[in-house]
Amino acid sequence: MHFLITILAAFFTGFFASIVATGPVTFLIFRNSLLGKYNRAVAMIFGSSIMESIYCILALSVVSSLFLESRRVIFFSRIIGAIILFSIGIYLYKTDINKEIKTGVRNLSKRERARAFLAGFILVAINPTIILTWSAVATALISFKIITIRTLPDILFFSSAATLGMICGGLAMAFLIRYFKMRFPEKILNNLLKLIGVGLIIASFYLLISFKI
Image: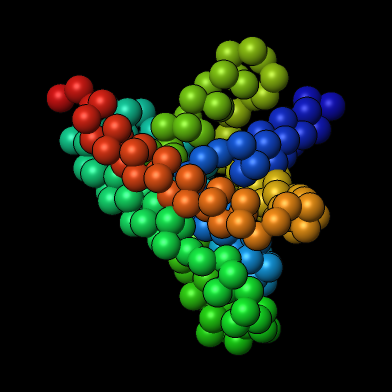
């Protein structure tokens, strides 16, 4: 029974994290879904989820405690994160929905799917601060005695369930965007992307100046 609770807790943690998280990959998935490029969005969901599962495993192991003590790693991670947020912010701001829609939506080749998969994978890989997030989540779940992590199989089962949850959550987000985007005019959606882009640019600067050396 406790094993089932652990699996469910991991699944729903991953599910809701993929929806409410505001990381770089989330905004790119949002953009691709908004433009009707669902195959690209799905490939990025799988790529980012698999890499995040690796960080989840690390967070539940000894690596997390070593990482938490390294302020230098955290500092450089913030620099990388700020660069990513700034770049994606500019990318979203310059996106023209009208122009993208006119080019049409076509099926992706295997190479293009692989690139989208790798984009999601790499964007998560170069942001090791995700270890902190999963470490905090696991600590909270363990402290409230919702889950029990004692052995390597426990870690692998938790990470696998969380990965499945992240994939399902990402697909659910893409589906919701696909459903609701038809209810809004293109001008509003275009302005929304620009607004998100400006927000990410501001966030990139805040990420740097808020770090206390």
